[in-house]
Length: 184
Image (cartoon, rainbow, N blue to C red; front, top):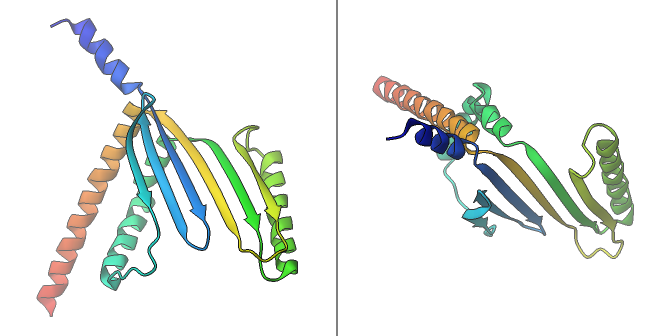
């Protein structure tokens, strides 16, 4: 076949734009939606509505935390996060606590934080939103939407690196458990 055609085809796949949108809603419970777009076409959509009570075994939870810690420590998770830089963040929050003083203090803190971020390095247009104070005591709710964007080749390489390190860590955990089981 034609070498130029295959070179161009591989290059076109590697530079294909990928976008991930994340929407988080906090209204007494936390619900989130993630949607993955490849070349502007929606590919995957994940939603999670928080359930009232979830039971997870302590050992399972401990293994997940340990695996996540190892992936952050060796740089695999950071490499994946760097491959998809943050494009935009939109925050809308309505603060309403039982105590009006708490509402005013949290409102002032968030307003000062947003102004500080706007002045100290967050590029204009990347961070938008509004924080409102409601002194009626109706309950606090917040919406956060983020857009991450990157290229398919760089993200694929970071995901492959993460998966290889996760498999190695799981194999090490299994060998360690086997060793501890043999000693009992």
